[in-house]
Amino acid sequence: MSLVDFFMLSFGAMVGVGWAVSSNNWIFTSGGVIPATVGFIIGTLLLLPIGFCYSELMASLPASGGVMLYAYRAFGTFISFIGGWFVALAYITILPWEAIYINDILMKLFPALANSPVIYTVLGSNITLNGIIIGIVLAVVLFIINVVGSEKASRLQTKLSMTIIVIGFIVIIASFIKFDPNNLIPSYQAFVENSHTNMLGGIISMVVIVPFFMAGFDTIPQTIEDSKREVNFSKIAKVLAFSILFAGLFYSLIIISTGAVTDWREYSQMPAPAMALMLKDVYGGGIGQVLYYLVMIGTIAGLFSTWNGMFMASARLLESMGRTNLLPQFFKTEFKKYKTPKGASIFCFFAAAVGPLVGSNLIATLTSLGSVAFVIGWFLTGISSVKLRKKEPRLYRPFRAPGGMFTLIVGSIISLVIIILSFLPTSVAFMGNIGVVLFFVWTGLGLIFYLLTNRAGHKIEKYQRDLMMYPWLLKMRTLEKKLKEIDDSEIDKENLDIYSERFLGEEEIEKEIKDKIRKDIESD
Image 1 (cartoon, rainbow, N blue to C red):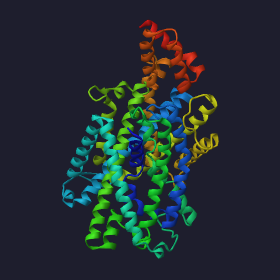
Image 2 (cartoon, one colour; image 1 turned 120 degrees about the vertical axis):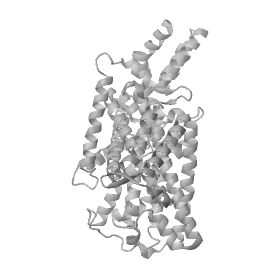
Image 3 (tube, rainbow, N blue to C red; image 1 turned 180 degrees about the vertical axis):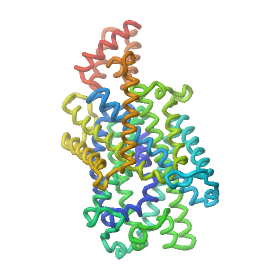
């Protein structure tokens, strides 16, 4: 993967279907175009310190696993498992979420698909035969693309993300052409359905939504092992931060431009696909029809980009957890031909395929649950970055967060506040009772997995888990073996010194891993 591929992966995972399907609802939820735009900008800026935490650690520890890897280095095995398990939940909740939306959009785009018998209902949502078939077929296609390899998956992601960017900016330009400042008035209006009564409350209600719709930048750390050899890790770290800013700018321009084309109060309550219908009505004729189909194509591209990005990231995260003995060995298996995750991809396929089987009335619950899971991962990454600054000041850091320790602490605090608000029933960010139940069910399932894989007789030594966590250790050991055969006097020390400077710090490698590597070389 190149720097462009990483940017497109992150952008496509963040800017999925929300820009085309949910933006008018954001205006309604926040009580106006202005509070929605301001809230999104603030939310984006609050995410930047969190992004910098990821960037610093990702460049220092360039291996798949993300928070699992960082928390392991900072706090040990159990916290590492907690971080990985909840980020896995975040990714997995999005897989059925996207499958549900793809079904709905395709049926609106091709009405004939909706003419299908209802098989059963879930929470009042009708599950049709066509819906099940379409969802499962698309999940199979996604599975095959990711099994064949990261190169093909990343190429697809780049094309989908480019489609979103091009169509998105066509929509922004078309909307600004019809822009009328009078349509921004009133600047705020409280609706009975909303829990706030002033603009500040509207802005806050938007800020707490942002994390879910901006989640996805942490897909880069999950796929960093797939980077091209010549790609500099510090540049990938900068790409991650830039992708957050760019996605936030994109979303904000969509809100402000489309929100002032017509009376925002009417637009905010239009049925989906509101943006496509609004532009079709405003322009009329052939241009309106073209804009309608462009938005629908952009919507499908957004759905697939998030779906594909999250599938890539979740499969690699689960594989990393299996590889490091944090999950059953099934998750670490690979397809021998393609060298891609096998058990993890199968698990993700079933998570994606279940979406059409449960219907759209679970979307709100999945959204809230996924948001909390993402932020737990962000929080653990933040405090891991703080801990490692103190614990390992000599750790090689090709990228350092601007603002240093202050930025890392701010990122951790922001994440913690969002988590607390998600569990308060009186908060606008409350995940809901069903979400709380599912949260603890997932927690219990994770604890069972952890106890099974770490019970007596199945525990592994720290040096073994180190080798599993950091794949470059295995590469380093192989290199040592080959070089030792050539020259035993200088090569060992030279390469171990380079290794210690880049990844571990001299004290740690001397105490734990250096001897292990040499013993393995000698025994071999």
